[in-house]
Each structure stands twice: as structure tokens, then as C-alpha cells.
Image (tube, rainbow, N blue to C red; front, side, top):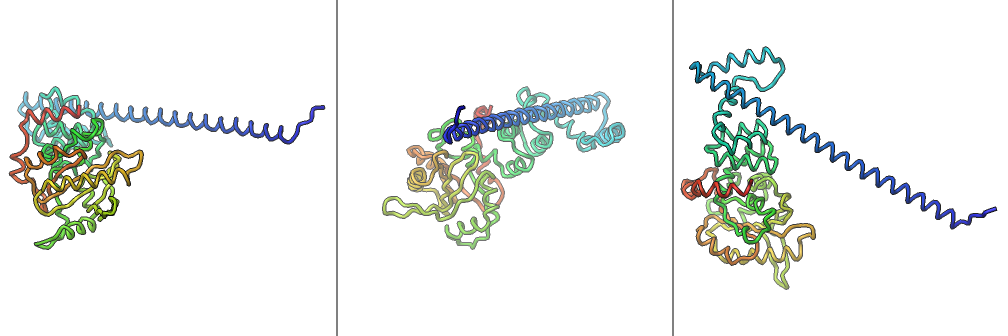
Amino acid sequence: MKILNKNSHHWCDKRKWIMESKKIEDYKALVKDLKQLIQEKQYNVLKTVNTETINLYWEIGEEIYKQQQEKGWGKSIVQILSKELQKEFPGAKGYSAANLWRMRNFYLTYCNSEKLAPLVREISWSNNIIIIEKCKDDLEREFYIQMTKRYGWTKRILTNFVEAKTYEKYLLNQTNFDLTIPEEYRIQAKLAVKDEYTFDFTELSPEYSEHELEIQLVNNIRAFLIEMGGDFTFIGNQYHLMAGNRDLYIDLLLFHRRLRCLVAIELKIGEFEAEYAGKMQLYLTVLDEQIKLPDENPSIGIIICKSKDKTYVEYALKQTNAPIGVATYQLRNTLPDNMKALLPEPDEIAKRLKLFE
């Protein structure tokens, strides 16, 4: 008779436990793979449905426009068409008179654009409507189409970016990111820095201080983060660091979720000075060595001043090794005429938009 000792029983139990654990891990891996497969197929289905919907609206818009041209019909034709289509397809959305007219304008806007006609099929109809109705030319439309496609902007986010004049501010913004940030997330970093911010939610005295401005931004933190761009989270103000025996205080410290990096904000109520870039570089060096987590990207800095000389800023940033952007702020929500005059020529804008392709 074979006698099993306690150690033998223990070994058998351990082996059984290992086998069961392996099965569980295999099941988990299978479940994970199946979830990913289902999500991919669901996304492809939604993408196909969206493309077919846009194709349908394009063809309806084309037919309405051509019939108007041939038969001299006015805008009132869409009222008749809307009633007939809703009668034929009860419960179907999208056939209101207003939406039929948008389909016509949609076709007219892009029918002669070989570049944009395919792109509009890759974003939702609601986002297409916003871009058609709020953008003034094809270059601006291309910017928002590409951004919506790349970053999955919802209708609300897209509206916020358009109303904040993100296109103009992106073209005008000043950073040294081309030299200091890896190519794979350089575009996203540039989008994170506007040329000008609007703090119209603040209540400041006529001769306010930098401290007052900082406190107002903190007290209105939700509005401030929305104005910054929506991907930021707040960490703290007057964030304390130590460099040797010296105390350092960052006005505002944020975290950018898409870039996965700390963002130091320095506030100045006067004109930009080159020494601010040197001070920001010190902050970023200390942040990266003492605060940044191993899986995070290097910190970036944004210096927000009341005014700046753009040429002077360019010289100041050239010799700075840390990623820094310099912006201005205003307390009203308009794009000044002097900023409009600084927008690049169409050829230069088209060149910059190629980065998104």
C-alpha cells in the first residue's frame, strides 16, 4: 500500500490551485479579448451608420439644390418636402424643413472641395451643422473637422472650442514646442495653449494685483478650467517646491489628462519679460525631478501675461530648453482687430493644417 504523507497532499493541493488560477487567468484574457472585439465591431457599425447617414443627407441636399436650379423653386419647397417625407416615414428624425435646408447648404458648402467632401463623412451630422453654420471659410472648417475626427469632440465640446475662437488662437499661439516636445504629442500640446485667454467670469478691482487675479481664478475654478480647454484638472495654487534651501511657489499647478503631464501656470498682470521664461524653466526642472510620476510626460509651462511683444517672445523662447508657451489674457470675450490682422496668410494656414492629416 502506498502511503501519502502530508507534504504530498500539500503539493497536490498547491498544483490544483495553480491549475485553477491559470484557468481563471485564461478566462480573464478571453473575456478581455471578446470585450475588445465587441467594442471594435460596435464602433465600426456606428461609423458605418454615420457615414451612410451623411451620404444620404448629401444626396438629398444635392437633389434639392439641382431641382431648385432647374425649376426655379424657392426656399418654400423644403416645407412641402418636409411634410411629404414625414408623412411617408412617420417617426423618422431628420426631415424637418430646417434640416432639409441644412442638407442643401451642406452639399453646396463642400461639393467643390475634393479635400473636405470625404472628411465630413467621418464626423457626426450635429458636428457638421455647427461647423457649417459657425465657420467662415474652408480652412477654418478643415481645422475643426480634423480636430473633431482626431480627438472625438462631442457637439458641446466642439461648440465651446468654436465660440472660444480656438482656430484663431491656435494659429497665433507662441510656444517652443517644436523644439522641446516629441512629435507624437506635439499637436495636442499646441492645442493645449491658446494665444489669449478670456477671464470674463472674474470680478476684479480697477487696479487689481496678481494675487487678486489668482484668487479669482481659483474661486471660479470650473470656469477657468473650461476656458483653459477642458482637458485640465486643478492640483493647487501657490504650489510649494524646494530647490536646495530656496522656496519656490507656482501660481497655479494643473494636470493635462490627454498629455498626461503637469502644467505650471505663471500669472503676470503686466507685459511679458524674458526673465519669466527663465523662472518657468526652473519650476519645470524641479517639477520633473521631484513631483512628476515615472509614467507621466515632462511638465510644460504657460506664462499668462496682460500683454506681449510677439517678436520679443520668440527671441526669449529660442534659448529655453523646457517646453513653454506664452499667452495673454483679457477680461472680455472678443478677438481684437489687431489679433485678426496677425493671422497667417491662407497658404501658411493650409501648411499648418497638414500636420493634422
